[in-house]
Amino acid sequence: MHADRTSTTRFPVPVDAALRSAGWQPGRWDIKQAEYWADALRGHESPAGHQHAVFPAAVEAWAEFGGLHVTSTGPGPGRQIAPAALHFDPLHGLHLARTLGDLGRALDTEVCPLGEESDNRALLAIDAEGRVYALDHTGDWFLGPDIDTALNTLLSGTAPVRLTTA
Image (cartoon, rainbow, N blue to C red):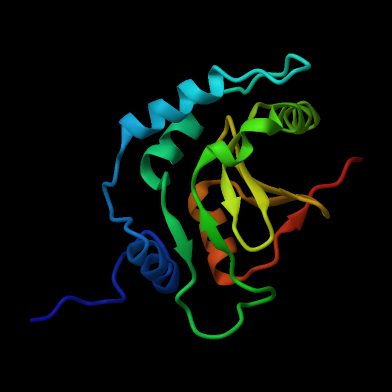
């Protein structure tokens, strides 16, 4: 008897395939690298005195996905926009402590860098509740209430929701 390939996977098949081809697998956990990034971010202060917030949701995301270069392996152009190429390395946001602090205040939470969308240089960020965002030259975008949803949004080419100030 063979295994049912449509059975319970954490991610939709194309997202799972993209993550696995980048080196991710269930149970991946590099806490040593995550702690290195946490220390690097905590130790950085902008010239104006801005510092990064570091919290468990960020460290957990780094431990599981940190260092991965992920590109969509699915066919076609994406549902609504081109699927993203991602690099999970929070140091892409090292010099954006003020920007992330401002976003966190606007959202009434703390926000920390997660990595970047490689094609358009958008910064990926995560908040203390685990919600994921992208920040680019066109604005700030909500990618999902958790890392799994955000990965599906990014790798399937689903258009994110623009954050607006009311």
